[in-house]
Image 1 (tube, rainbow, N blue to C red):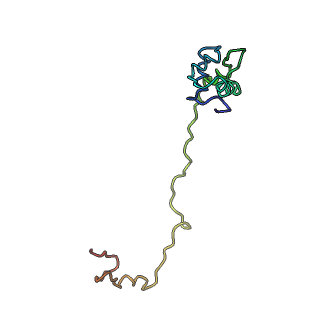
Image 2 (tube, rainbow, N blue to C red):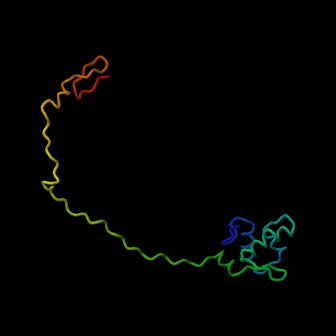
Image 3 (tube, rainbow, N blue to C red):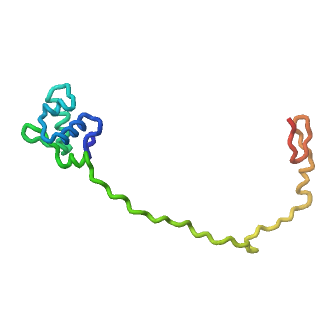
Length: 138
């Protein structure tokens, strides 16, 4: 059982609470028959009725059991108001693109003579000699 709100749906305690909601005041014997309880009445009182009383969703009045206002609110919670309509947020401001200033332009780097001479040396792949940038034929 959920000790905060009430019995979990699908359990016999929840079925007993639903029966109490529909019938009003019910004796323990009638409630035992409604939830198809096969064991003795002491176990029913201890496991179902006491649990519902402990959760304050049912109360014992004399020889009968009744649902409380909290139990009715557990079975039929009040309608929740719809969330207020939210305003959409526009995108971030992006300034228009401008030409790069002389300070921000990349420098033109002059290369020393012979810097690309490695391209003239053929590579050997298996038994083939390949020039720089060529692909081997398989």
